Image (cartoon, rainbow, N blue to C red; front, top):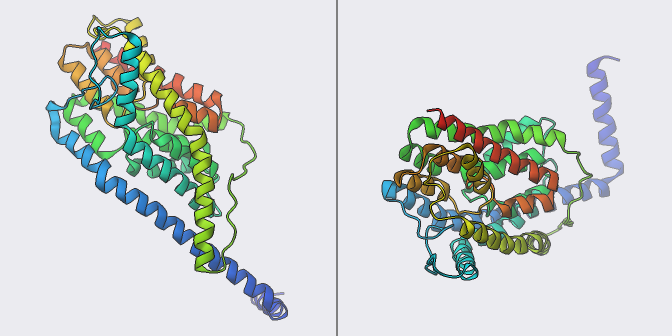
Length: 376
């Protein structure tokens, strides 16, 4: 049978099946139409949430910090501003409480966005037939591209990452998005290159690119894939009203799935971060640089939960106040990339082994970067 004859035969068979099963053809058409309506509403939900946050809050705040230039300031131990002022003569419990409240206040807008946007992303992606490719490197690139414009800190990206993974995105995509959002944002990169010598900024960028394009796919290869089960079920709608009801219900389920895990961990992360920063001696990074000091700075930097661009600001402030360059570089290459909060969400969502590997790798990169700066 020739190729043309075979194609004609197939067309004839399809026409015959369609003619014999008009109800089936109509049902499939309704399914496609219902899915299209639901997806449109889910995309609209993400666009509205994202636009309000990015236009009204995030990018104006980032541009304000960028234009502050060398006058950038940080009023709190873990935040740019402070609701409560602190004094080192206060008891530890008072300082931890006040630092925790300051952190929660500074992150209230970003965390609100993440708790709203993460479920919206889960709702939409659960309707998309294909959420990953067969290439881990292509998946990594997709995750990085998704993470860069989100412009949220490592803390705020954690609930969104939980939504991404629950929707079926790969481990490497989730990791790439978590690294790219706080560290590859164009405004944050511009601040880094404007405030620091070129070799310092390039070293910071190199560590971020290593995490995204080397560590993320390699770590995913070592992790055993679990059977994927989406936590929400989105029924096919037959009308616009049914699509609205379906998306609202699915969004509610998605919100609870993200919130019930991420919110308690957020409170715990804030308290632990406040405790660690308040236990550190105030002049800890002013002393002469040592290998032990670099290790300590890297370990603490990879632990603390800080807002967007705070790593750039605090590293610059430390440099201008006489901190040794190895400590400055170690801060810049660890602080703000991950945190105790984002690691805990990662561990609860994917695996604690992966969360531990992320922490160890970020800390190790900070140590290596600090040692390189020591040799300058």
